[in-house]
Length: 310
Picture 1: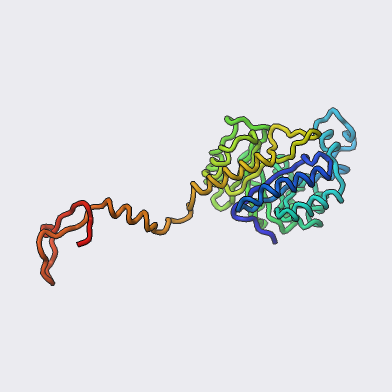
Picture 2: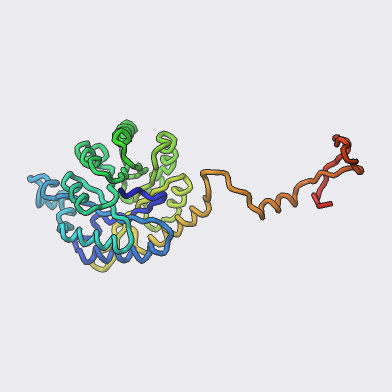
């Protein structure tokens, strides 16, 4: 069974393949070239909906319902999804998929996708959750808009089934304004669920690289961002990052990790640090010669700077 890496970055394509398989493959390749520059494990994530059953029969073909129109216009075939999964693996990414219905979980199984993501909107879709936990795959669940009671129930559900899983602080506004980020929710989730991995998934301006630094400093270990490849035919939305923006995002994350350093144990002795501190300390000096066997008493010594040999 694939296990989730200690630090994991997730690039979410969603429907940014635009229903154009060649464009989708170019998206994967473009981000593969960027991510190979960094010492991170990176998953590339797709979204699966079995549109024949997912969309209510009475709503099929409705252009006045935003997401029915969007999903229908960007539909690709099973063969196309197979091509995308193959390209994701070829580029060195971990495969990851968000299923929105039970047939999509079967598709994930048949493709041997490594990690399953539960979208915020599906967090309490219990029939879907039952289907997902029937697999042996690690699970990442986003919590945007969820009540504390719902999060408690989902975590209990996953723990009682012995699943490897993580939850994500997530804000479901597209794009997310700075004042809506509430990054301290990461602290809250870490304190409430001390044995659960906590990640960060949101939809801020893709040009912002400060937020990822703060999320790293808060202790998140999984990070998710929407991505796309802008072209004259396919412009990007306000919350999806270009390859250049992901390059800056990963660079900021790496810098933040270097700054945060080791946090699980006390650092070992640093020779330069030890010598520097020693040079600033007072030393212990004797006031007169001490004979062998003589007891050294406080009145026999004094303390002075610098502490020098001899």
